[in-house]
Length: 149
Image 1 (cartoon, rainbow, N blue to C red):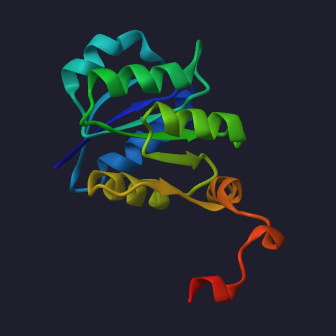
Image 2 (spheres, rainbow, N blue to C red):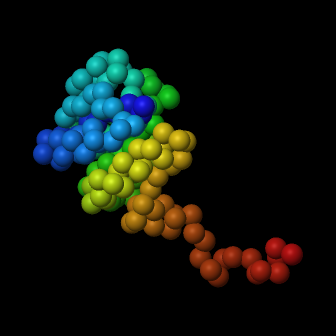
């Protein structure tokens, strides 16, 4: 059983996500909140996976770092509307193992939870492109193919 917690300020979205996740036979939602005011309860719940929106009051990136320090075994997926390079990299550096946009389907979010629980990282769509483009070298800077022989 994968235990999951959801922290999201958007109550209708949070309720929709929780309702969907609770239908999965291999998941159990153990804690939900609109912010990290219930941090003590989250720490007590010790979820396998935390879904968190970084667009929280205060710094959502700091919340990721704080949870990861307190619960190092918990996998953290950022689920947000913020498709911002600085937020993406700051969240990953703080310990998130996934970064998804809320435009992803509920089915994709469920698959991401299972994936990070297995030890994978997850990024999709435009977020994946942002991360990949950071590491790409301009073509004219690459060594010739002959250099690899």
